[in-house]
Each structure stands twice: as C-alpha cells, then as structure tokens.
Length: 410
Ligand SMILES: [Zn+2]
Ligand SMILES: [Zn+2]
Figure (spheres, rainbow, N blue to C red):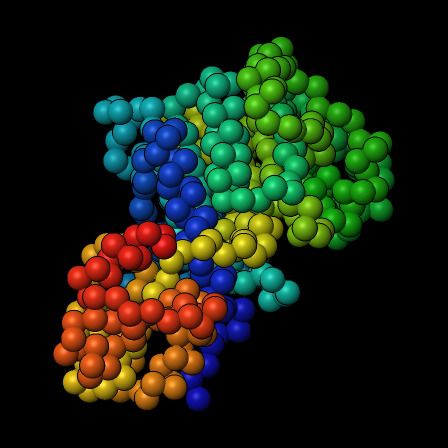
C-alpha cells in the first residue's frame, strides 16, 4: 500500500483552511507595508546553510536534509528562508540597483528533526526580510508587521519578547565574560553545551537543560553606547503600539543575529511556544560574500500559528448546494451552478449520477445553507425548488429570479 514517509503529513480540512487564511492575512498586511514577494528555490547548495545558518546550530549539525546529487554536488533542502533570500539579494545585485529591499516569502522548509507530537519534517514558514536599513525604525517595522499579521489572522493569546544581542564590538566582550563564568561551572553543563561553550556560549542560555541553571547567575550583556541607543529607539518606536517584554535570556537559535532579536510566543502551545521569531542580521550578507548591508527579518511557523489560533468560528458564507433529481434536469442544474458562481456564491453539487437521497445527504454534510433542487418539472417550467437546509422550509422560484433571491439572503 502507498505510504507516507515518517515525519511527514498530509494537510487537509480545517488545517489546510487555516494555512490559507494565514497566507491571505499575511499577503494583505505585506502589501500595506510595501513588502514584495520573493520566491527562491527549495534546494540550495548545502554550503549556503553551513555558512549562514551556522555550523554550531542544531539545524545544520543534525537536522538538514543534505545529499549528493547525480552530478556530485552537495545540496540541501532549505531548513529556513533567510539564507536563500540573502543569496538572492547578493546574486541579483540588488545592492547596486535597488539596495533597500523588503521581501516576504511563503514556502515549505525541511528539517530532519526527531519526529514528535506536532512537529513534522516538512513545514511552512512565512517570513519577511527588510534589507538595507540599519535604522531602529526597520526593526520596529518588522515587529509591527508581524503583529499585524498575527492580529489579522486572529491569534489573541500571545506574548512578545525582545532583547538586544549587541554588535561585533560589544558582543565579543560579553561572550568572553560569559565563557569565563560558565567555564567555572563546566561540570554542570550538558555534553552539548560543553562542546559549544567556546564557540557559542549564548546558546547555553538557550539550552533547555542548562539555561534554567545559569540565567540568574550569568553576567548580563552590556551594550556599547551605539547598541544601547539603537535598542532604546526600537523600544521607543514600539511603545503604545504593541505590548512587549524585555528578556535578556532571549538569544534565538541561529548564529547570525546581531542587536535586536524578538519572539512571539503563544500561551496555548506549551513549552515549545514560539510561533514566530527573528532579529537583525547586519553581518550576514557580507559574510556570504555580498556587500556590507544591514538587515532585519523574521519567520513564522505557519502550522504552529494555526494551532495557536485554534478553530475559528466558521464564517457564515452563503453556500448553495445544487441537486438534480432527474437525468432530464441535469443540464439545467449544471447551468444554475455556473450562474450562481458568476455572482460569487459558493456553489457545490453536481453529483448528478447519485440519487436524490444521496445528493441531499451530501448537501447536509457540506454545510450549505440552501439546496437548489431541479427535477423534470423544474427544468421544463424554468423554475427551481429551494430548500432551507436548517429549517427544512421549501419555496419555488423562477430561474431568472434566483440570483436576486439569493442576493437578498446574502
Ligand atoms: Zn554594540
Ligand atoms: Zn546544555
């Protein structure tokens, strides 16, 4: 029997509807902010992710779908969207033609995580990348853009956390202090953190095992004056527009972040509660061989956002189900369906090879408010029978009056 690959899933019904609604909200808000779509390949050279996402991250070390193709190239299915967007920015030479770019993407990502409840190896991310501005306004805009999408989609129960990780001037100083502090208690660190202590001590604070032991005692980041001023201005721009908490332990799991980082967390998701996160990545594009171009961006897990919102009360669309009782009425019934659709009524039906009972059962199941029924008499007399599927009430209506009648019910 045909079978799914472990860790993957089929998406349909309410879950698929939620993804479509989220994409619709996102596209609407992106347009308001002047953010344009960028579509990049799902497959890239593996090296792209190793060098950008970072070779100390779990994503690159353990979770990448990487393989060698028939031509001997080392490729990987994208585990996240930012590296591809940064590569596209560099390769298309936008820095020289149109340096300030606001991009969004909607696409599937792949991570070979250990399959567990609610986590799959292919998932959708919606992301934004605002490239070309170092101004605090860009950070604030990125965060408010995300908030507006979350709000339009209908998630109400969420928290926003922000932090600043400093820059290439002040971060190394902090890293050194942190390494010294953590080294003194090296025996208490988990194996993974002992390994990454020298290269990426910030990740220790992010570790599920070690984080809680050290967040209280660890030295706090001291921002250089430029970073402190930048962070203050980001907060000033956000105040009054969004509720946020400052959290000095927020470091995000990727290597390339500088200065502002942020995360949207949903109360309903439990321990793994992030629905979206991001930050500034001023050094990334240059480190990939591009120009020195500041940027800020975020990504949202679409399935997780859907879970966080939960089932939305179904919008009362006027759905109409068309039924033909008789072979001689099939053509008239089919024409009625097409006429209703031209007037933008959601129109279902067309199962004319089934008997009346089976078609009415399908009509009830579909959630339609009304059934439009045609038999031999209706077809000959150019009228239809309309049944209210909630109350059972029936009425007759001339076919040419049908649109007007439903427009009144809409
Ligand atoms: Zn700094
Ligand atoms: Zn650890």
